[in-house]
Amino acid sequence: MDETRLPLTDHLAELRSRLFKCVLAWVIGVAAAWSFSEEIFGLLLRPAVEALGGGERPLQAIAPTEIFFTYLKCAVLAGFVLSLPVIFWQLWSFIAPGLYPNEKNAVVPFVCASTLLFTGGAVFGYTTVFPLMFQFLSSFDSEFVHSAWTMREVFALTTRLFLAFGVAFELPVLVFFLAVAGIVDAPTLLRGTPYAVLAVFVVAAILTPPDWVSQVFLAVPMVGLYLLGIGVAWIFGARARKTEKASERAPVPD
Image (cartoon, rainbow, N blue to C red; front, side, top):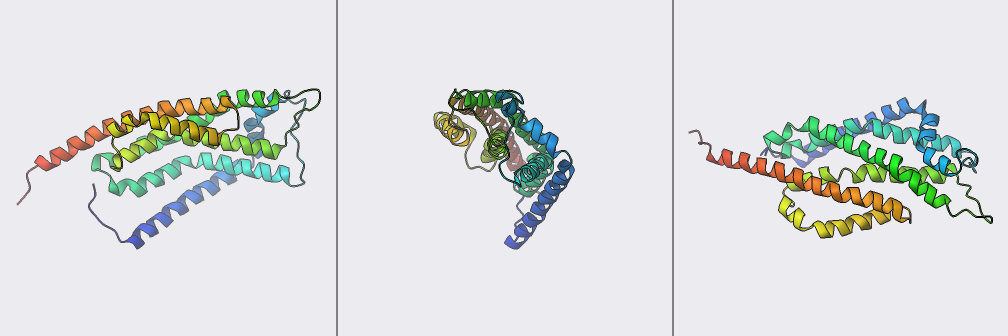
């Protein structure tokens, strides 16, 4: 690891600089997505609209500003997704000085893997879970009551699950960093798998609506990703130990 110690003020200045770059990338993404906000909204909420009959019962807007602000939120969400590579790059650049030399060079794999994991989780939720969830929620209609969902509430629920699946699929990256930082090692994580499974299902129950479909579809992949993260941490941990032993055996110059 880099033994250089920077003053706290320098760390804060670097953090501020990298946060500014992340926010700037996000703002640029929002500006680029604003022109397509209506199309993004239609695509994002298609599972809910199809659950209501495919346009027979459209979503409702019950406030004068609801449509405008919902489209704005769509642009903000799309801008965040577009800026993810920059955000992950800045994150890695900030923590890289505390890593081993061979780990610092993994910036491109880290950015690609983190972006693909988030995108893959969001796409998995959108294509697999959202249709089942909205069909389940709309199945309680009867001759006494019919679903008439508002665009704001449906967008809020969809966005929450969209982000939940994206963040949940980052679990291998989190496990990797815990192992690299020396907080826990791969064998300890493996022994703690039963507790991790319990924690995953609790988190899934909190993040998802009160239906078992979305909870199970979020929790089961998270368990698999947790085990994948342990495998990655084990591999990198073994490499780090070999590098450390090699540096210890290297002759010290006079």
